[in-house]
Length: 298
Length: 278
Image (cartoon, rainbow over all chains, first blue to last red; front, side):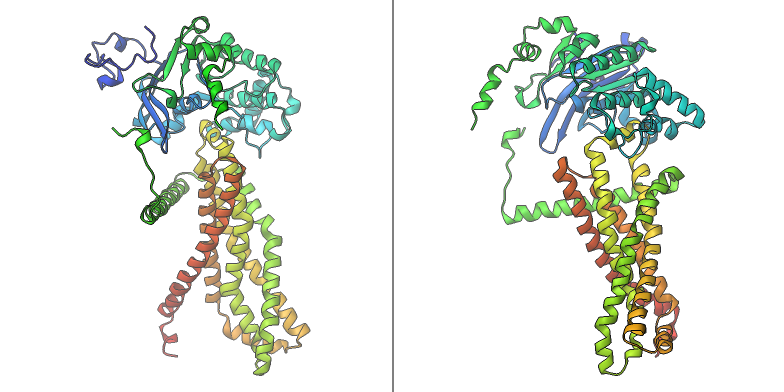
C-alpha cells in the first residue's frame, strides 16, 4: 500500500499511533517512533479560497533525499500544495509538519528561520525586478547571514556558474533575461543558502524543449549535490520521467465524487505509464477524452 | 452538511448592506492588524540602510519637482484670487498674512499630501501589487525576509519623515511665489506685506502644518501598502489597487485634516489660555 492517501484510517478502525489522527506524534510503541520523522508531511489538509475548494483532505509524506513529483491538470491545487508545504500560507484545515514538527505550533520567527533550509523555484521565477541578477542571488545571504561582501560575491559567482551562467549576466536586470535564464537565476538564488529541500513550481513551463532538459538536468544535479529532497510540481511528462522517484497525481476537487480521495495516483513514473485509472491515462497521454465536450458549451 | 451547490447568494438591499458592512469592518480590522505588524517591526528591527535609502530617494527626492510646482501655483493663485477682494477694502497689505497663513496651516500640507498620494501612494500600491501578483512577495518570505519589514517599514518611514519636509518646501515655494505676485506684479508695499505676515503667522501654525503632514504621510504609506498587499491578480487588479490607494488616501487626508484642525485649535488654547480671553 502506498503512503499517499493512506494516512487517514478507514472508518471503524483505530487510528495508528504516530499518525496525525492519533493525536500526539511521539508515541513510544509505534514502529514509526523509532524512525526519523519524514522531511515533510501534509496531514489531512483542506484548503479553500473564499467559497472555492482547492484541496480536500489530502495527506502526503516526503522522505529525506527523495524526489516527489506532483502532477495534475491546471487548477487541481498542485502549486497550493507546494506553498502549503513551504508554509507560505496556513491551511484552512489540517496540518503541515517539518521534520515531524507541526508548523502551526511554531512562532513566526521560528518558521522564518526554519524556512531558510527550504528553497523555492517559483513558476514565473519571481526575481526581484528592481535588483540586478547578482543582487537577486545574493539577497538571501545578505538578509540572513553576516558573510563579508567578498564571500557573498564568491558564492554568487559559484551558484551562477553551477546553473551555467557566466559572470557577464551579474549586472543585468531580470527584464533583460530570457525565460530560461530567469529560471536559472532563480534556481541559483534558491541554492545560495544551500537548502535541504527544494520546491520547484512548474520549472519547465514556458521553456523550449532544450532549455527544459537543461532545467531537468539542474534538478537532478541539485538533488545529487548533498541529497537535497525535492518536490516538483509539473505538467511536463518528460520532467516526470527524468527526475521523479515517486509521482503523485491530484484531481481537481470540483471533479471528485463525495468521499473520493483527491490523490488519484501514487507510485513510480513507470507505474504511472501503466496506470489503469482513465484520468491518469488521459493525463499521461495528453488526451482530452470526455473533456472535449466542454468545447460544445456555448 | 451543506454542499457547495446549496450555498445561495441573495441580493436584497439588506444582504447588500450586510455584505458592505462586513467588508468595511473586515478591511478596517485587517488595516489595523497590518499597521500593528508594521509598528512591531519598527520596534524589533529597522531595515538596513541599503533598503531605506532607495525608498527615501523615491519618496523624497523624486517628489521635489511635483511639490515645488504645486506650492508655487498655490501661492500664485492665492495672491491673484485674494488681491481683488482686499483691494476693494483697501486692505491689500494684508495679502501676505492671508497667503502665508493659508499656505502653512492648510493648503501647503493638504495639497502637497494630495499630490504625493497620487505620485507616491499610487506607485507604492502598484509596485507592491505587481510584486504580489508575480509572487515576489512569496519569494521574499521564502528567502527569509518579512515583506512587512522589507517593503512597508521603509515606505512608512520615508512618508512620515519626508512628507513634512516636502510640505515645508511647498510652503516655501508658495510663500515666494505669493510674495512675487503681490510685490512685483500688484506693487504692494513689501515692508507692510511682511509685517502683517509676521503678526499673523506664528511658529505654532508652521508646526501644525508640519505635524499634519506627518499624519498625512503615515496615512498614505499605510493605505497604499495595504492596497498593494491585497491586490487581485492581473493588470486590472494592479490598476484598481493604485486607484484605491489614491482615493482612500485622499479621503483620509481630508478626514485627518478636519480632525487635526479641531484638535490643534483646542490644543492652542490649552497651551496659551490667555488667548481665549481676547
